[in-house]
Each structure stands twice: as structure tokens, then as C-alpha cells.
Image: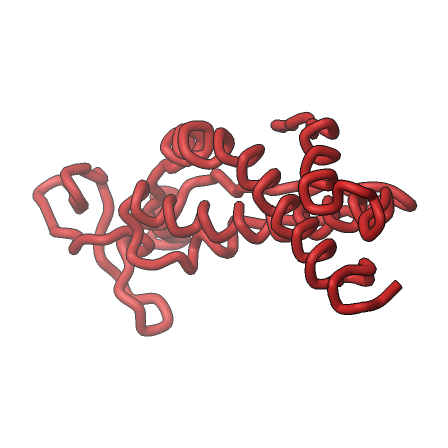
Length: 193
């Protein structure tokens, strides 16, 4: 689990930047801005992860990733909530990857990797690369390729370093909208007091 600390001095600085006399923004507006930023941060994580991991893992589409990526905003009573992101890092079936599998003498190869004992079969009309589980004809399962290491490396390298900056950007944008335009119940330029 990865956590980051919120720099409240910086957030109060944003409040002072948009509302130096503290007329339109108060503590409640800051908590509301933080909560909205957290919900948007969860969507940012999901969007950025699915797009980047599709390229990193060389997948056909993001369908398999969307099923494995869950985010959750958890509100807290009278305070700022928190966000959880869950990544399913178990192996993916070969049908999720780009490229055309080729039959070889030992089995099937895809993108330079050889899968010994694998063969082509149709399941529900879809051509898959399958492998027998035991000595008998059945059961058969789709051949899986490991993705945990590549996923973990990408998340550590590309997603996590940007979270604090993105969170601060979202809070700043929300406080600006609350102070200048009266968004979210703040008393701002639209005449509400």
C-alpha cells in the first residue's frame, strides 16, 4: 500500500491566493475541495493506468485491464476521505496480447516466447491458445503469461510519482472555482453570501 501526506500549508496557501480576506472560503470548503480532488484522483489513476499499462504490456485493448483495476473513494464523517486503488496482477491469457500466435514443433509461440505443449482450440467460437492440465484430454485451460513484474514496475515508475502533484492541481482548481465562481456552495463572485 502506498500513501502520501497532504501538505496543508500548501492547501491553505491556495485558499489565501484565491481569497486573501477569507470572505468566501472556509475550512468546510477546503474539506469539500479535498474530497472532490480525491474522487477525481481515483478516476485519474484508473484512466492513466489503463492507458499506460495497455502500451507497457502490449495488449490488444484495455478490456482485461479494466476488469482488474478497481478504485474506491471512502468518505469519512466530517473530514477528508481517502482513495484506494486495487490492481489485479495475476497472469493474463494470451488472447489479451497483441500479435498472432504461431504453431511450432514444441507448442505455440507468441511475441518471441515459446509455450511448450500448447495448442490452438476454439472455445465459444473464439480461437484460443490452450494447454492440458493433466494427462487426459480434459480439462484444458488458456495459456497464461505473467504480468505482475511489468505492472508493478510501471505503476512505481509512472503513476505514483505524479499523484501528489495531480492531487494538488485538483485541489487548487476546485478552490479557485469555489472562490471565483461560487461552485459547490461557496459564496463567491456570483453574489451569494
